[in-house]
Image 1 (spheres, rainbow, N blue to C red):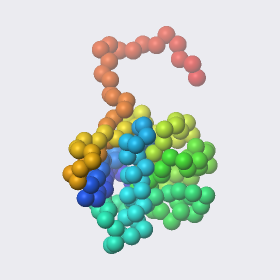
Image 2 (cartoon, rainbow, N blue to C red; image 1 turned 120 degrees about the vertical axis):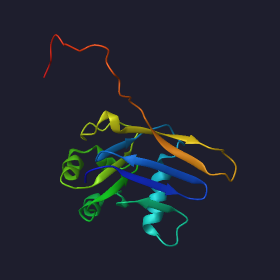
Image 3 (cartoon, rainbow, N blue to C red; image 1 turned 90 degrees about the horizontal axis):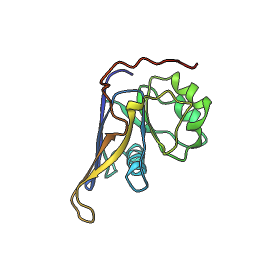
Amino acid sequence: MRGKHRVVVSTKRLRYDFELKRNLTIVRGDSATGKTTLVDMIQEYVNHPSGSPVELSCDKTCQVLSGALWREQLAGIKDSIAFIDEGNEFVKTDDFAREIQRTDNYYVIVSRESLPSLPYSVEEIYGIRTSGKYGTLKQSYHEFYRIYGREVLAHKVEPEMILI
């Protein structure tokens, strides 16, 4: 898959609206910021597309990858966006890293831990920021924000030594 893909997931009370630019996006953040809620909403929509209170808008099919049968699930996912919630231990394995490189999917991985086996860009690590009112029936909007910014260096970096 190439290009940018906008994903909008919403209910009457919550709305996530974000754009994926690379094939691997990592979502990090503290407890209760809405990371798992995002994945749960997508799973609800996937399981009950016509009877769910969740609305999903995206130019690609969205799936949730989880559990011990992740390989079998992954084999059936083509040209899609796969969401993976934290707690799925397979995302830390070299086997998973090899398997996803053979696919044409985008991946959104919710994890508080670093994932050294995966070749993701530091520019595609996001947190979730919430705006709106809590405890009311007004809709809350969730947006991704970049955790590591693009710094512009004032001068050229000339290292004395490079270790390989």
